[in-house]
Image 1 (spheres, rainbow, N blue to C red):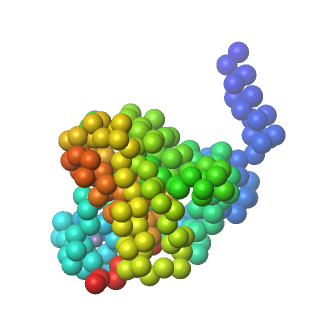
Image 2 (tube, rainbow, N blue to C red):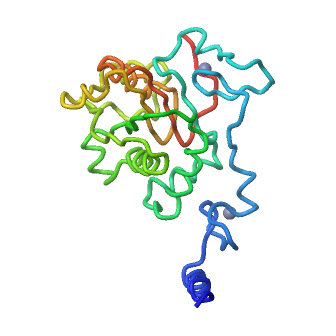
Length: 245
Ligand SMILES: [Zn+2]
Ligand SMILES: [Zn+2]
């Protein structure tokens, strides 16, 4: 009997071979990236800014902040990301957005779970999409990540806590300053969820940290509703130092 599950697995592998999530090459044993693609993904490691998680190019003492956070401390306590957003790594995010969820989601969640600081009694909340954009895109990838991550870590998942009160123009072409203005007041907490947030520690989940403006806007709404601290966690982030002023 013992041989049957492994025979079954071998047959499955033969029928549906594991593929590299970046280039699509057939993989041997483990799901994820092939040996050629793995070094192309710039995973973020210490030292990073103690607040926003921007990687430093040089060794620096623990607790150091980047220029932008020294100039104006974001509302979130910390922000951490798995890998830098580059031409190479962008492909992974795009595949995730375009429905290759089955292959990418379990792996992304595993990576994010490793980056998340160990904390007790956490509420896990995704950055919301406006319902028009949600309709066009059919699903909110931040919510997919948050739900699976909460399950993996044993956190409480609260999906409809944050609401996007108006449809902000797509952020793609805006400067850092324009993004901040663009999202100011764009988020609020659902009336029924406010009492659940009082004094709680929250992990706020999104796919990409671009300038931090969206995460900051969400954090302000959560703090206003009584949350004690908010830690942002994203799959990827732009690593350019943020503009100050
Ligand atoms: Zn590959
Ligand atoms: Zn920083």
